[in-house]
Image (tube, rainbow, N blue to C red; front, side):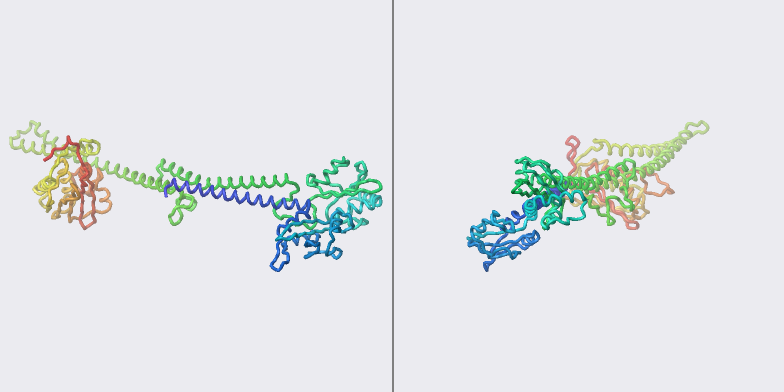
Length: 611
């Protein structure tokens, strides 16, 4: 997978992850809001909400008996209520937590009177009727309303409770509610209720434990709004009026104090819709910020740290430190102990490997540069010696000829001149080698190509070496190709290439070494030249330096007249002809040099002459 695709898929996975987390958070937020809304409804009107929930979950078993969720029945029990299922005749077919004073069958008018409280009944009733499976099912929920009962007791007692309120107000903080009726004490303790007595005109006469925010004077409209829409004010209210005086007794109780209701254990207590929205959306924004912040930190760690590591690595390369920066354990920062890339660096695998390869190449080039510099200095010293020796001979013989102390005969002068010419030719050869190497390396017209039969050009080169008396102690064998091979070559340069390879093989091997030169035809117009000897062979260091320009493959204590350019020139000539050079050798097993030409080399038509 390419780096581009890897990054695309990586970012897709990251944002999909963020999207999934966001979706989960939104769902959880709405579930929490729904739960809290149910909690608010339970606080405000447990009877209505519970009855609707029971009816929604109501079902009939195969035997005809009703099935109601045990969880909802538990809430009914915890709230101190009871439940009856009535058929169309008003008869209770099922009953749950029903006290003994609750009838099992209701007459039509009786049920309405109980519901409207026109007849005395110790419970407040809530009725819900729905058709289920073709039958009208009536759920009847009854519960004692402590606040309503307390308000009734206060209105019936009237002035008898005023002294209790005044005494309790003076004794605060009260140690208890001794002397209060059971109904009022329960409301004060369990519902954290407060009592307020108003005149007929709505002005407060006295109060006890009033919650904050309760006014001390009411208009008719405000009193109606607080009684009909208590959720707006966050306060439940029950009121009763004294029949004789017209005074109004009020019971105030906060919504969050409702005995028997099990609130959601997760999250803060909520008392209003605005507070619920603030908590819900505030939590969502916080979660999203945390998710985005976590993603930013993760991306910074995943993408930023590897890039900083690569930049630090490149800075070290600029300072010629070619090793990768290490971690605290002394290992390369991007690698595990096993040598594999760490997970955070896998996205930048190509970059890390490229910089690693660049480091290796730069280190290798630096090593080769230093080696070439050293070899160049050695080569200059050797070449200076090689030039100085023949120059000294030429200078010496010239001094002898110029001296007037002796009379030289013609034969002696001829001998002197021959030696001087030989030394000058040697010096000229060194200079030509330098010039040829430079032209092969930098000039585009160094070769003059002609289509020639390679069998003839190569054979002439082998024959000239074999006929040279200097190489008579060595044995050479020429194996030509059975087929004629025509290829664009520079005859002089091509023979120079072969001369240098053959002379190098004889110069660095003992007398008696056999050299086999074989020409083989390749695909198309390509061909291969093999130079194989059974000499001493080369070690790895010599093999790696064989084609370096200033390298001499002889020990420093051994006299040599070579320039150190022969094999470098041979390789440059081969490559200029479109060839490649490969060497295989081992100490004591001889050497095989293979020069291959693919046949793709073509000269400019103006440079070629067809034979």
